Length: 533
Image 1 (cartoon, rainbow, N blue to C red):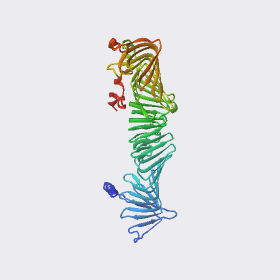
Image 2: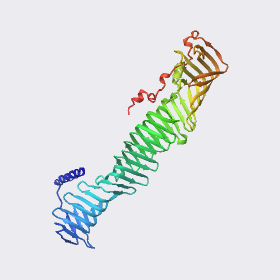
Image 3: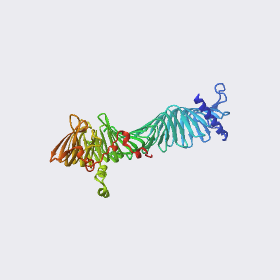
Image 4: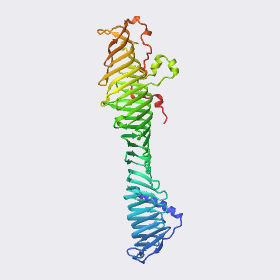
């Protein structure tokens, strides 16, 4: 019923348009002979051809040549059969077995081995309907379009001759030596060799695979933009975003809003709201709420930064994060100005922004430590000028830890109200077991403040203040356990009442628990949340 209504509207509009035009009469240019058969073909003149002369009919610039024609002068129409050739100037040539033509509506219906040729393409189909007033042609059976390098097939299509444009629907396929296209609906401009997609579509090139529900593709240079469920499989990466751009010649892809880049080789996902892929340089850049997700032993390590950059081939991938780096994992949290991760060696560096000359001169030690990278392992806060983590390249679990310069470890004492266990030093080296911090050695100018309790009743014995050149710390259940002084220890255990509060913290002490992210959501600042696209 729906199709009948559409066809009624279509022919009604044609009839209105015809009134505004002068109706031209179909001319009989040539015929070898003519006859009539009023019983079978009432009101028809049957035009016949010979070996030397074909039937020639002409109407408004269109010449129709055939073996036989049934001409209806009163209706200003005809039906031509047998080796039909329809030409319109030097732009359109159509051949078929049969064509029905109405001179009033200028509608032509061609059937059987239909072949339409224009300067830039050819069309093959079983049946074709031409509207010469609007210069369109459409088919409802399988059609095949061929230009210099490309073959296109679809179940339905409309050809807009003035625009050199096709509108294809249902099982559309384009084959080219460089790529293949599958789509449910697209517009194709033959001279420009460009396609616009409106339903589920797929473009497969030699090094890429693109999916979208809406988009544009320039087939000459293999570039385009894509929206609605857009995905690009490129360089062992899966790229998603609300809007994607791709240019094969430059080996470049970009994504905007709700961007994710999945590195299937390194099992890493990078998210953000703007991303760029440079295949030739083996690099990717993500900005605007950038977030990297590393899958580690059925757990996820989340890293946020203002900008995340990956470089290098898959087997030697390096990721860098710049400005306001924040880390979240169930048993590990962190914060720094920048981060460096080498996937091939398992090395992670947390780095601070160098202090300016004025900052070096005016900042207190606490302010300087506030600028340093910080890690939280369970209950322990650790800071230093540079922090290095080394992971097993196969299991991705942490193996060792190094902190260089201004090492400061702080734990909130669980039994006292305002007490903090603290250790300072120049260099720290720690080891892990099954991903958990096991022990560490600290050397050079070590200082310690530690609350001591009796094993029996957990009453405070005193506060230990000690300095030494080296010490070893063992961890138990995520907290500082046994402490061993290795070189030149010097200090005392003070009763709580004999140690003033201002002497219970070491110089440079700063408790940064408020900065510790407790969830993935905490990785993002207010500026990240309110970011303007």
